[in-house]
Each structure stands twice: as structure tokens, then as C-alpha cells.
Image (cartoon, rainbow, N blue to C red):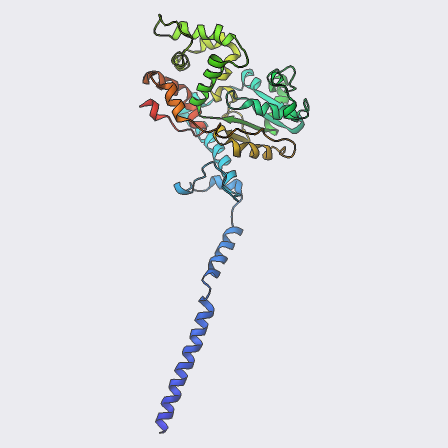
Length: 356
């Protein structure tokens, strides 16, 4: 009987110890999210500054910023602009591309850069990339007109009336001071699509009535680059491509003067390897880039970028294919060879569908 009581007591003791151990285990592991929450808190508090992210290891392919602003995201958008600037730095260091990425900061470049001293902003003009609207923004900021809506269209490009001084109008010391301390930006788009836009605007539609493009520049291109001498039509896109891809195009450029700004490379216009820009906007993501630029420049509370019509900034591959249809691969490859620096500096994909 005594042994039975001892056995019963031992059983009770084992059961009791098991219950205590079970309770301890439950208290420790009943909330599996507690550990994750602590880890997330540690991750957030240990995050490096945004400015240091570009020095980290490359993103896995599926996590790379795409250029679009995601809802409620505070990191993706700035990373896109940092990556654009980092890409420029890397391409500028590439000795193999030096002839395509570097240019002197000449008067030609300084003439392209407009100044807003009041808000310490420099804007490099890259024609056929929506620059008219950015000019309007700066005109308002400079105080020439109270609002964008009140600026007459014929004033925007009249540099005697629009109140936009060019950087070239300052002394060398003043130029260097502004280049070092001002907020600097410009906008790019797919290089070939920009050339199509320039051709249509200057040689086909010519909405601003600039007759010298059709009556002086076009005949000069046709005389040298048209293969079929019996063809009497006006300038064709094929003539334009052959002219731009010719390594000896400069002798004609000198005759055409500053009118070539509508189709020369971004490198020749803005010297991105020589001037350290604050932001590079892309026409294809302008809906996101315009507000970001205004905010970074500290003027978003003073002016808004004009409304962008839906779909106008989207890259149109079908249009590009249509314009290059029938143009020889040799001529397209020569054109790409000239604009390769623009493609690589700003992350535009090589148009293999045209080249191969």
C-alpha cells in the first residue's frame, strides 16, 4: 500500500512538472510575430541614410527600382534618381566611351543653361523633351509673369522678353559660382524618339513658322545625303538619319548654326560628365519626375508643372519602327554610334530591334 502511494505521488509530480514546462513553452513561443517585430524594428533603426544606399551591393534583379513611384513609398523614388546620377558617373569614368560622353563646357553649352537667381536654379534646355513647360515654370519664378497661364506662347522662346538669362551672360567667376552652388537639372527621353520628334516639328509640321528649316536646312541635307537624285520630294527621315550618322556632319552643323540644338546629343547640349547635375528627369516618367524636381528645388509651393496629357510621355516603339522602316541597317548603326553616349549615360536600352 505504501509503495502504491509513492508511485501515485511520483505520477502527480511528473504531471505537475510537465504542466509547468508546458506553460513556460507557451509563454515563450505563443506569439511567433514578436520576434519578427523586433527584427523589423532593429532593421528600421539600423537603416543607413538614403544617400549611402548607392554604395551598397547591387539590388537583386526583382528588387531594382523601376522608375515608377509606388504607393506610400518613401524610398523607391529617391533611389531612382540616385541610380540615374550614379549611372552617369560610371559611364563618365568609362574610357572606352570618353569620346561619346565628354564635351567642353563651351559657350554653346552655357547658352543652353537658363538661370533663376531668385531660387538658385539652373535648367539645361534639351529641345523636343517638353522644355517649353519648364521654361514657363522658370519664367514665373523669375517674376516676368504671375502665372503660367498668363505667358503668351510667342514670349516663351523670345529670350529678350521672357526674363530668362542664360548662364553664358555672366562672368567666368559668376558662372563657376552658380555651377557649384545652384540646383541643376535637365530632362531626357529616348534618343531616337527625340530625333523623330525633332524631324516632325521642324521639317513636317513646323508649327512656329520657322521657314529656314524647310527652305535652307532641308535643301542642304538633301543635296549631300539624298541617294536618289531624281527624287524631288521634300526632306525625308532617311535623309535626316544619313546626315546625323555621318561622322563628318560637323561641316553642315557649322552652316546651320544653333538650329542644330534640336537634334544634337544631350552630351553636346548639357555636358553631363563635366557638370554635376542635381537631378536628371526622364520624359517617360515625367508625371513622377516633375513634382520631384519642384520639391527638390524647393519651389513646389510656388509653382506647379502644367498638366501632362494622358499617354503623351509613353515610349512608342511602333512609331519608332514605322519611321525607321526601309532605312538601311548601316545608316541606323551609324546613327546609333553617334548617339550611343546618350543611350548609355541615361540608361536607355540599345534598340536592337532596329540594329539587327
